[in-house]
Length: 364
Image 1 (cartoon, rainbow, N blue to C red):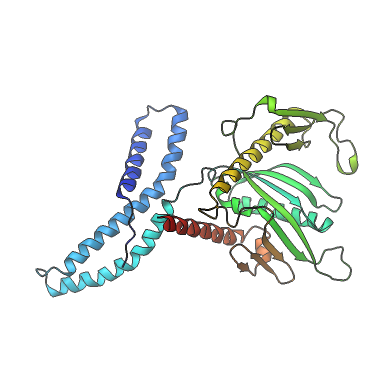
Image 2 (cartoon, rainbow, N blue to C red; image 1 turned 45 degrees about the horizontal axis):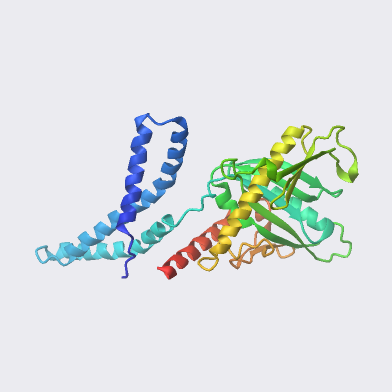
């Protein structure tokens, strides 16, 4: 059996850092800010250390059993028992090594962040807007199942209760890590409610999942912003209020434009717009960085290009297909409510881990 060679210095460094953090947190001398940072690092390292301990214990058990199985001083029965246990340990070891390899993979620094979810109707007119609303409801339901906070930032509705655009923040543990693979073009195939001849239509909506960032994560200079205020308007152009509370922020160096008009307060609309702007600029920086590494790894399942069709929801056949991993689930009713969405997300996470492991092993 070919064993995986883990760098002992790396394993030792991780365990020593974990012990040092534990001691510092227990000393009571750290500042509140340092406690938050150290607690986060300690929580991230704990599952890695657990895997290291499991791997080391099993590796030592393997060595002990191998020695016992060939020990001429031991009686035949003991050697036989050692031989039987040796088979069991050898069978367990590959899975333990696989888990440790995954635990040691470089972490995406954004995984622990909250997310900003943006959904826009694509091709398909009114049916695309209805599908965008369905997707927004799916992620709202999925967030509730995970105990995450789902806060609507803005919604642009159509006359038929569809969404031209909907934006929300999702707050909770590992939000971005679980939702980041949802970015892309989602396609629906179904008979619209307005279709009188029962014909199946194909429509699309785009999903963008951006890591929510704080001011310290990305610096935006005031001189790089143009801020325009105007009067909010609702569907059909009617005035929502009589003050210039709506805000449009243009980031001059990149041309990124964000508008907010849901709140009656100009200050609140500006704060929401800045939150979305920071997320979009941070995401653009991440995309540029990923592009420079494209020759070494696949990055975010597929090329990460949001023009890709990532998933199809076929209602007549009751199936959902994720094209990046060729996985089809015949439970569209449970996926569209968010109940079975984890089955797709878990498969995407596993595929990403496998591809990154393969890339590392290829470069090794």
